Amino acid sequence: MNMTGCSRIESIGTYLPDEVITSEDLMDEIQSEKRFGIPNTWLRKLTGIRARRFAGHDANPSDLAIEAGRSALERCNMDPADIGMVIYCGIDRDWVEPATSHRIQRELGCKNAACLDVTNACHGFTNGMSVGDAMIATGAAENVLVVTGEVPSHVVRDCIKDINDNPTMENFRSKVGGLTTGDAGGAVILQRASNKSGVKTYRFASQGRYAELCFYKFDGAGKRQGQMLMEKISAAALHMHRALITETYRELQWQPKDIDFLICHQAGRKPHQRFAEMAEVDIAKAPITYEDLGNLTSASIPVTLDLAGSKEGDRILILGTGSGLSVSQIGLVL
Image (cartoon, rainbow, N blue to C red; front, side, top):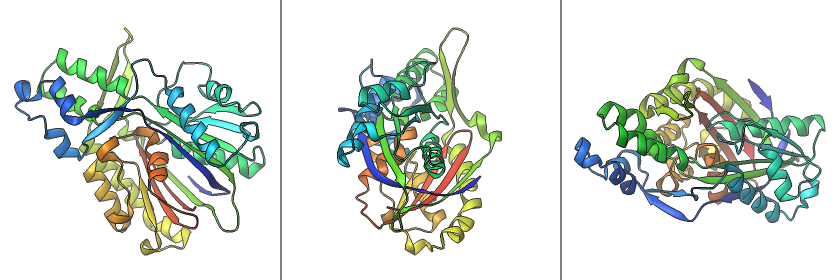
């Protein structure tokens, strides 16, 4: 699926919880050296992830999304009543119904906004941006708040318990990918594109045959179950991105050297480096967040974009990835 963009990013907001949890902390919790002969430095050395942030045990996804949305509104001095739509894009939601975006709307004072949830694993935020763009293109909304809040620390704790309850090497390998994630909130406010700035193109692809590589679900007793096969996911995602990149550059009429910032979904060091190589963009132009924040799931794109230090007029290529598998390539001028 391809779209010509009609919107621009007016503002970005981020929220990061205060508590810092190291990779060594998590490996110690599963007694990796005693049980598996794996030193507690293994996860950090393998992925490049030194630490991540955890919200409180009682934190809801909307709590982090609200803080990120508030930051985005304050940065551009926008009246919340001027937001025409709130799109929430997190993996987890506060409840099965109603849409989590309703609580975000209420708490932020976006009283005139329609509410909608869009979920697609780590890929949800780029999907949410495309939905917001389409609403602006049709005239349904002038200002769209696309927002996510992720609390995968809840899943991390379940993974640790599962490994401790069933300390086999096979179970460790299927669950250890879940220990790479961190909590965060991210948001952008979209408005109609100008002559100088805006999204130029959206390109999406999905391959459901990879759905079993990364999933989490609930069994009949309500217990979370899942796995994250990191190497296989990264290889498949890289293959899917490689199939799109030539046409993406052609549509943008850009060369790799024209890119000011490459914003990738970040699951760790190797995938990040391989994505930059695939796009033929200098790794120095691909800001790193995984080292100290981990895999931020659907918040990865907005948080990295916010922390990149980009400025008006910069050319940005976004590479989105999520289990399923789904990938996207978005070219925009800030």
